[in-house]
Image (tube, rainbow, N blue to C red):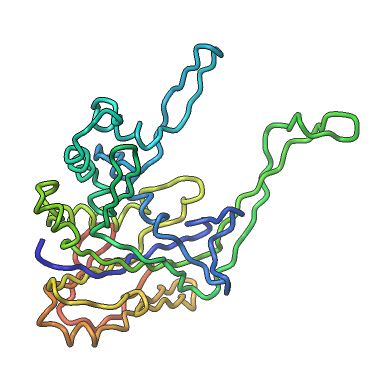
Length: 317
């Protein structure tokens, strides 16, 4: 692929928790700004690829573990070594002396091909810088607040005591969500990151097909990932700026503004403020594509020649 790609991907979170910290609350910086990590965005993409039958290395998978001496049968997560062996059905990784084979296999995993990998196993220790690099996704909606809901369990907790007697009441839990948040993630795709591996015959490099798969998954993975905490999280925006391979652009998410609709039936407004920058570089820009949710959002952009699509139907609007 003889180009670079710069862009921004937007996630809407309504009464949901897009990315929680260890306390269960949406992640925030020290000044209170709500954000989502790049891992939060990559995870639903990897789940979607996994569901489609692609090889995904860095994802949790389970196995049955039997301890015949203790007579125990447990369900446990696979280790990295076990996950690799499960995907490639080969011999014991410790016995494999062909590092070229291992590295070639890593590049066959779609998550590694896109995001890179740190593969630290005895005899095969690799670090691959991914062709795609994500930044942190900051929330651009000013009035985001966390909401905590109390949940009543149908079961009592037998370990809890009420005086000298067992507690008779059901246990309480909680679910923490944001009332509303709108996250915008910057990303850049640099296919030249794999040139060295391509020269060694370990991969065919980052190709146009790889890019198309990434683009199609990135604009719908959050919408498809409907867990309890993520129900209410949807893809709402995508900006893809394809440029010459020697053009370097800044983080484009800083040029995205979000404005909440003033009236109930009005649409939210997403404004792209870097139109002048992109227009001035038109001789080095091959294509600009913008994906929006036209049912909830109005786009304000002055980028000349940009193609605008419905993020759900993929049809031009």
